[in-house]
Image (cartoon, rainbow, N blue to C red; front, top):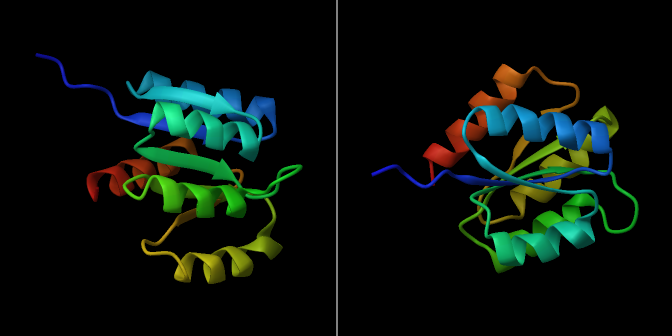
Length: 127
């Protein structure tokens, strides 16, 4: 009997980044869904029930930290890994992370696929 693949929800407003991340995780056997806004990501998460949320921080409309707060509240078992290309945001993200019941994984873009996969797998293993 084959195990059910772990579910990853990727939320990034840059379609090229979202598509690249999707390919990386699909090649490793994950069940992946992709959204391009925090609003769509929350709606998708409610149905898809991801094991891991991988999201950008700076997006038009509701940003990634708002999505993180919603997912933490609505899906407490979901692990969260955030990506940001803006190094100036790291302090705010780390401060926000300390207020959550479980720490966030935080990576800066661009990052090597091997590092991304290693961090995602470590977070999923701790579930």
